[in-house]
Image (cartoon, rainbow, N blue to C red; front, side, top):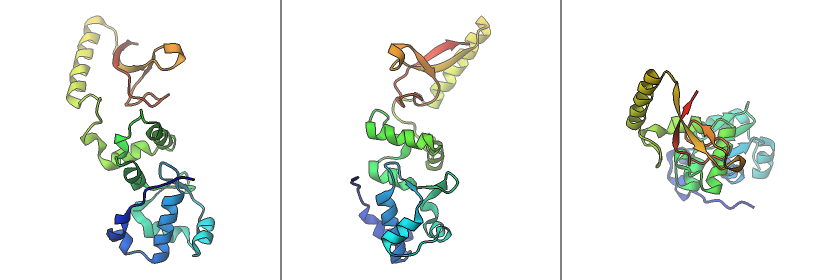
Length: 192
């Protein structure tokens, strides 16, 4: 049985105050029955039976508005604020070295919700610790272009992870290694 934190301040939030008691009960049900990433497999028949009220999909979506995001052809709903509250950090601040956070990241990536949440929260205003600042990346790109022009070899900056295949280097681009979701790699020049 999963244990969850509950937001006692929800009773002071305007959107929550304005909804009916039966909808407050459904919200609590959603928060208690979603997975560790805030994703709920939509089953309004079960929710209606357990809460004691008849819920209709379109009505619920209208009532909760921005609080839920529907995806996977309506089969699942995501509560974006769930992660921020449960883990006390925004999605882009989840630490891939933490086992629970890594699992949340994998789930978000699997359903293409990571990039959606990062864009919505304006994550690129402040980068997570350990990542290069945009100015440094621009300088590196200029150096790489100069090297490519002088040597005739196209050089791309990639990160390397050696946690797989008995230490054999695995090169990747982006913030996290796509195999283990750790940001441990140091940028390497790779000739193509």
